[in-house]
Image 1 (tube, rainbow, N blue to C red):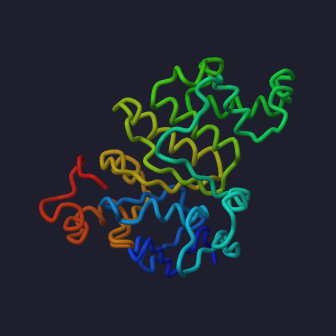
Image 2 (cartoon, rainbow, N blue to C red):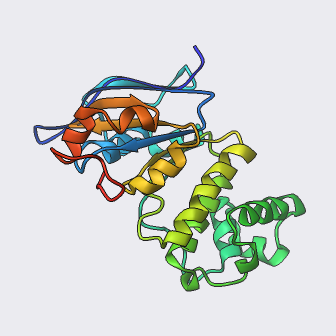
Amino acid sequence: MDTLLYVEGLSVSFDGFLALRTLNLILERQERIRLLIGPNGAGKTTLFDALTGQVKPDHGRVLFKDHVDLLGLSEHVIANHGVIRKFQTPSVFPDHTVFENMVLSSGRKRFLATLAARAASRELDGIARVLEQVGLLQHAHARAGTLSHGQKQWLEIAMLLLQEPTLLLLDEPVAGMTRAEKEKTVALMESIVQRSTCTIMLIEHDMQFVRQIAGRGHRVTVLHEGSVLSEGSIDRVQPDERVIEAYLGRGTVSAEAPC
């Protein structure tokens, strides 16, 4: 098999409500970005919760890199295997500088000593490289709390990239961003997959952003009522009558349609 993520028959229930219903999904190793869309309550976030050990599925199987069974593992162990998640709301340390946030994300235990020594040259180069990639190198000594919303999102992505993930899960990465920030994020997504071996799976509600990413050859998976409803290129998924019905019950899936 040449599979990065294999999800089979995954079901998750909350007090009798089935959030995921025998969901099946395959992410091949050669895929660099997979987009997850679907109406509110479709099970997108629950899927991320299950993949990262935050909820315990009722049944199913999740294999990572062909052989690692993620189900039953702790969040920490799953992260050590390279599955790293970013939530919708930026989680940065506002009273620390951008550089200090990056050092904290590296997991170094002696934070103050690290700052005093300014870290090893190799580590500094790595931090600078990632900050340059997300467009924040010139803000390295600014307090994170002074950044714009979009810049905070990029900082958290940078903090996660420093951990060298194999699979990066992003939950609504452009929520609350300006149009200009969204455009920069499109370029950032492509930069990440071109300059690393990381694969991105992202949930997004902004259909214009989805089209911009998917239009570059990336597959889209549509979830509805806890299962995969449709999957393929954006040109295949968008006119699918089942997708149109799931979103709106009429008309078409517009750029403004919630996912």
